[in-house]
Every structure is written in C-alpha cells, then in structure tokens.
Amino acid sequence: MKRIPPDRPLAPLERARLGVEIVAAYARANLELRRVPIEEVMARLRVAESSAVAAHGASELEEARRLGGAVVRTLRFLPGDTRCLRRSLVLVRLLARRGIAARLVIGARTAPDFLAHAWVEHDGKPVLSPLDGSFGRLVEL
Image 1 (cartoon, rainbow, N blue to C red):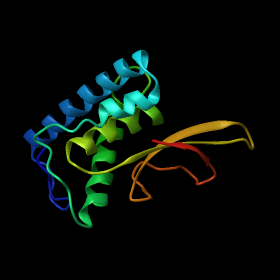
Image 2: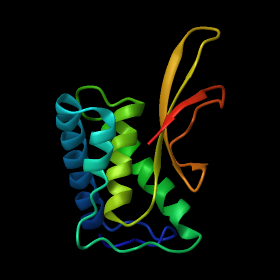
Image 3: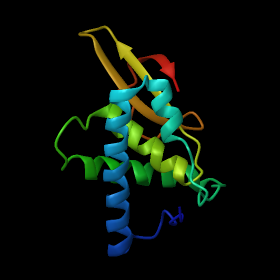
Image 4: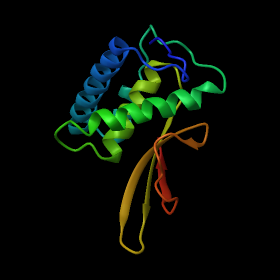
C-alpha cells in the first residue's frame, strides 16, 4: 500500500479508498473470528500483500496513529460490534498492508468491576488507546 505522509491531509479519493479498505478489513476480521482462534485470525490478517511498502523511520508511529483514528471514525458508522477488539484487528490489517509492525494486546482489570480491553501497539507504544492504563496484560499477539 502507498504510504501517505502524516502531515498531509488526505485527498477525497484517498479518504474514500481508505474507508473502503477499513470496511473490507472489518468484514474479513468478523468472518475470520467466526472460523478460527484469535491467534490464527492475527496470522491471517497480518499476511502482507506483495505491494506492501516497508515502513521506516519515526513517522511509523505517527502513521499508525493516524490510521487508528481513521479506523475508529469509520467503524462508528457500521452496524455490529465495532468495539476495541474489532477495531484493533482492523488496524493490525491496515498496518500489515503498509509494512508497519504492530502487536495486539489484550488486557483486563478486576476492580472496580471486571473489564477486558484490546489495543494495538507499535514498538511498545500504544496506537489504539489502552484507556487509563489500569489493564494488566493477558496476551500479546
């Protein structure tokens, strides 16, 4: 996938293409989650296409966060479960297509009530928010 400099606004056609890519990744993630365990879902979503461009430099995190924002904004208009796990899977797919490494983190907290959360990290830094930081890490994929 073509990388877009983080400091440049997306043109309308680029925005439309990104929206279609996000919706397609969401559909694929939902389908995969029904078929196989989460580890296999991650492996399938990470399969980079031959057109993937390896990302280098400090702008990787900026681009990952920009894509994360686009995923959140786009998925809020879709029906179905678009909470943290699905958002994270979609973002992992988008980043893999651009040659940007990412890890899915699933965590939980027990107080005041039990709550689980999923987020994406690049080089140990959150791309999609780990919320308030009170979640203990259960698994990283």
